Image (cartoon, rainbow, N blue to C red; front, top):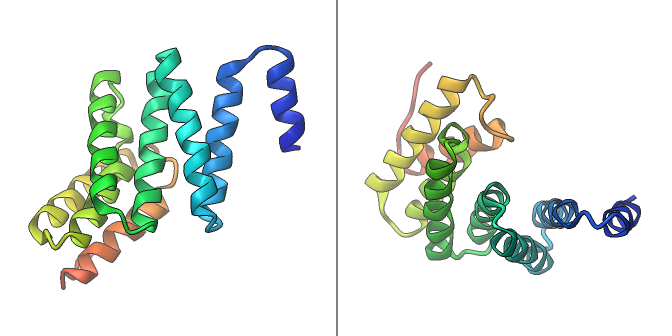
Length: 160
């Protein structure tokens, strides 16, 4: 199915479709633990997004790369990616979709021993998730889980 989708997008010269498929492949590779290949796919999507000025796709790529960098144990890179995504969301008027990025920033801050910063990012993520009823995020359950992980590591116990 994947090869078919890629061949169709190439046949009709739908470069942006090919880029989105590449990013989706990167997400699957990341989530199945194939981190090196995931980085290649997501970086290819980011390159296309920058060249074609597809700002929304660029935000998606940075967001997914941030999550990847957490899994790779590269918190500094995760922070760079998360902050860039927040900037793009602000420019695009899509800040309601930033809960995953705040959760990524929280995890990265925790990895760097910045507890207060991590806690601040958690509360920003949770506020967005609660405000949107989970509709702003592609994977609200992942965002809530990441926030819970950070709060638990910080010794915080939330009721309600």
